[in-house]
Image 1 (spheres, one colour):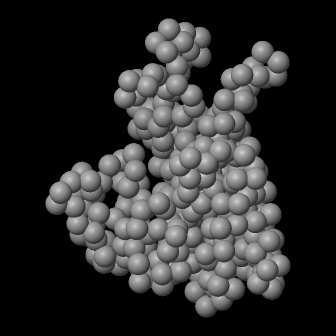
Image 2 (tube, rainbow, N blue to C red):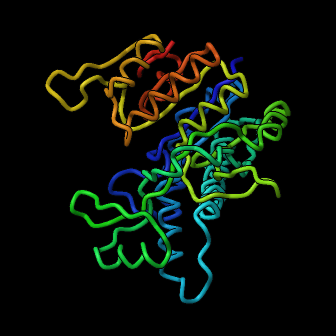
Length: 309
């Protein structure tokens, strides 16, 4: 029996062309869990997940209903998405448990992720969130709310927020306890709710944490032997999208880190996944694999995807 942390990418709940209905996300979650049920049966598994589309929709609801109810801050919207996705995954998992006779129960843990108040990311917001605005709307939001706005590929302007480095998981003891009691923890949704430590205690902050980096940190804390990132591509590629692109099957963490530092992987897509895998391997001396959700069992076994050792 191994301790394995599995980080689901956004395609575990929504794919291109899907509507964002609860029913569609539930169907996708069932499909995702169908692909890993044998691993859950025979191992200690922890599941983490993204929340991009879901928190984006919550922000839209915030905006369009703001004349009727008080909008919630970004960190609270992230917590709402953890609850929403948690219900979807629990419902999907109960379906799989019944189908295959799995005794292990699951539990969703609303997770807060600690960041440093002086993280340089707070001075350079970079993560786009929420809807697009035209130039006049963007300028109004800059003045009225103090938002940082950035134009994107001729589509309009979007709010950008800090994406600080995760330094600790506040609910680490609860996750440990639930895991050691034989449950399947579902946690660190969307990277966790970003929080900082103040004189009054722990409080939310306006930021977004990369879910793969937070998952890597949790896998290290829990002393997992494997860290699996399931996404919508079959492997990591060098020179991706170019004629000379090359699939990376197995690679030492030090070599992959060098490629990352040389700018081989875009920050908006594969970069954080590569860094998360490298950090886990170098901290924990385990194995990380990045691969396709559609080939999940082969990825977890190290027979598909990019194995980082």
